[in-house]
Image (cartoon, rainbow, N blue to C red):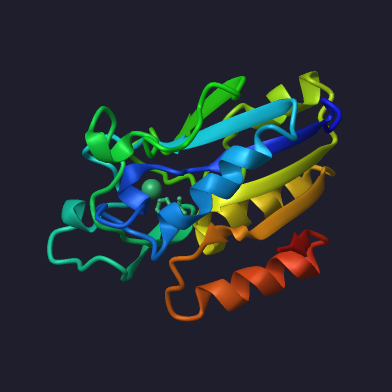
Amino acid sequence: MRAESEALIVIDVQLDFCPGGALAVADGDAIIPRINALMDAFSTVVLTQDWHPANHSSFAANHPGAEPFTQVRMPYGPQTLWPVHCVQGTAGAQFHPDLRTDPAQLVIRKGFRPAIDSYSALFENDRVTPTGLAGYLHERGVTAVTLVGLATDYCVSFSALDAARRGLDVTVLTGACRAIDLGGSLQAALRQMRDHGVRLAD
Ligand code: VGL
Ligand code: ZN
């Protein structure tokens, strides 16, 4: 069993990111048995849940004429537009039913402000609005985090980069993640994580 100072953070293993979901990640559900087993090795476990209102500005449907997977300019920078996904209270926003949730001490919901997206579990897409997770980890004395989940090139990598920026020791288990891979986004995310001192392991 790892020390309490080492947290497992499970990113967005929700139905909409799994095969059949609104923003399905190829093979997204294949990582669940491994993540479930990892929970037995960590005494600190956190789950994140993408949790958008129906009027969220990251949805292409809320930008007349815009197609999903294109980009727009938001006050905080470029934003990819997505299919409607993980709407608060819908089935697609629920955790995959095979994912263990009992071992988690905290579920952090993100992306609930209509005007700003939040890929990272720590800071919203402006990179300054906190979700509260950094404070929680700090108060619990967490100094190292292991990240798994969906998707490698968006919510996992943004979380990893923010955690590294906060001075945490960060490992991403790429074998327990799956990617959206939009226009080379997976390779770019892996390079960025490596460049910022994130440990990548299978
Ligand atoms: C995610 C795109 C939009 C993710 C969430 O969990 O990686 N990607 N919302
Ligand atoms: Zn989202």
